[in-house]
Length: 289
Image 1 (cartoon, helix red, strand yellow):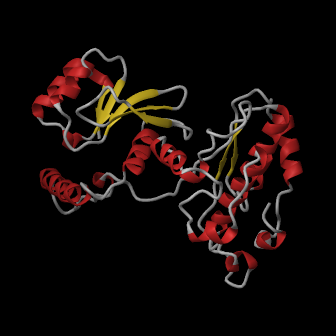
Image 2: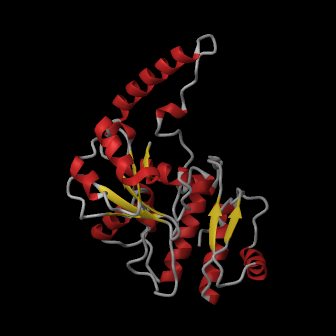
């Protein structure tokens, strides 16, 4: 675990044993319930859930929320490289996972020097698989975890939307038609700027969350689609196919002709003919962002 000196920013730390006891009393071990902590601090709730699941074989999940509050520059945490409290939240739960799975941690200096890499000793292939699966490389543990114990978590950061129309503000002094034309020009300009700027994982995450997918979604590339890069996304309950290419090929649309799954793509990837074909084949199962 993190040295106690790194946790001094938290004046009222939640004891992990107390959180474990509350979870044990309130939630059955075989449930799929989610524990939500809006003031996660150093991440004690995540630790408690991990340890409790290990003790009784439960499948509880957690969501931790922590604002990007800075640590005191004079604190031991700041000197150790943890600039934000959320950095400690993440690091604490990584170490709980490594301890539970029996995986040796990397040394602290290397971890801070390469923050995008796992603190655990994974191969390049495993890191690549983690990225393709939509999971931060530092948290892709499935290759080495114990069969009965599911370990891992994702880290999300609140940022602006990848879709420019979400930021457009109409001019109150102009009419609807003028604002509509202004919106079209705004979107075209922003999309030209973003064509090569967006990250597939970020865009896919936003789309899936807007479609109501749970945070534990995973996505895998579908090799049967040879003309476009198509992913299958699922959270265990919902499922969809997604393609974020700038141009959806007609061959891909033909492959979807008899599909029972939803298909999500970028609106700018479709011309009039392709839109008509998709709507004809899939109806409401076709969604363009």
